[in-house]
Length: 190
Image 1 (cartoon, rainbow, N blue to C red):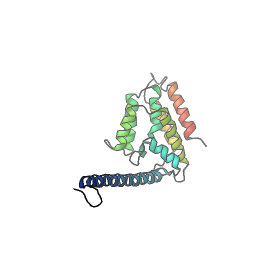
Image 2: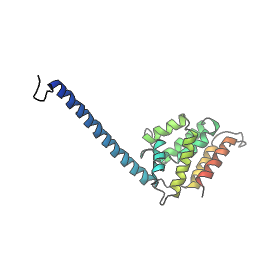
Image 3: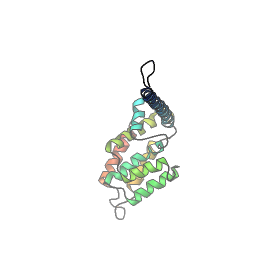
């Protein structure tokens, strides 16, 4: 059947469906933009970082408001992975520390930590995380994470000593010492 404007009911129905689909897509984009803005504000509050590039680095590394509590664990993971694998003692120490810091089993943060314990993050991820930690330490108020360079380096040192060696000789490998020095140089940079 044709109407005065020459458009059939079938064409009109397809056209209306097309525009409904476009409307749904636009609404979803707006909702995603709102979620992204809320996540950005939450990361700003938790870290004290307001630099858009650094916030983008956090998000590119996979940090969300639910997983940002893991940022201080990245240097510890860097030390643990220095010998090409994480020992059972290092894994246990990191997991126990996570539990004492309120990271509950099965949470988004715990799932991300488990992923990092199973699969080594890239060197670039380690370097960016160390730089971001320095920025948080330098930010006024330091955000809700309350990071302390000396405490983080001490925890990294404990991870380095967690396994290896006989009678305490050679407990910290050359690779772990290098990782510790690199972390200290970046995090304590003034």
